[in-house]
Image (cartoon, rainbow, N blue to C red; front, side, top):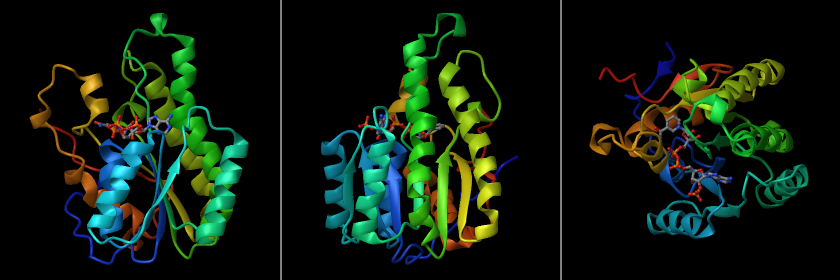
Length: 255
Ligand SMILES: NC(=O)c1ccc[n+]([C@@H]2O[C@H](COP(=O)([O-])OP(=O)(O)OC[C@H]3O[C@@H](n4cnc5c(N)ncnc54)[C@H](OP(=O)(O)O)[C@@H]3O)[C@@H](O)[C@H]2O)c1
């Protein structure tokens, strides 16, 4: 079973002076992660496709007295290699390094028998969930290498660790994520300052979960805020030395 740190108590200054990029920061788990990272001292770069949502998170961080965040509107689905290179240049100019990435933006696609899966939707899911994060990471590697202690978290799912009927491209993209992290972690091992892991949030009360399980009572699920301890632990220095590993943000549900 993957390691879970739901009882971790993050020190108030855990992420002080760290520059952390969160994708899909406007909603759901990404929104809460951005707020939690800022609350613990990080300068957060808020990336997402809906600027108004990113602005709302920006305002919330400022109102709470957190370090001034930055907004980076980008639709990962249509982004090109050039977009990621431009992004790296901008972040280099503004911050000079990157101490962490939470790859969180994700698309569910459709839960449907494979025989009926629409190939365009399949491609779309793969672009957002695996191709985008892969090429973004390649472009940002030089900035991560300039950090004293960089943590890159790729968001996985239980269907990316054990396949499940009808989960199609979503499950395949999460399996690819797990594989990519194993490959990259081994390649970066000799550096000693860039670690890469996967994190499965588990069933969490968000819009994506509602789309996947429309009949479920949301009150039976943990909120994004409740699963933040593992997100904080894995982003901060207390998880130093862990790389190429799988983590869970909450224990498996018994019901
Ligand atoms: N919730 C769960 O139970 C659960 C379980 C296992 C894994 N996960 C994973 O956890 C992550 C977060 O999920 P969530 O439940 O918080 O989902 P969510 O509420 O649907 O939020 C997804 C976020 O990703 C952004 N996004 C989607 N497509 C994008 C694109 N093309 N470019 C840029 N941003 C994009 C969305 O932006 P907009 O708001 O602008 O649409 C939104 O901010 C995902 O990787 C998901 O696979 C979730």
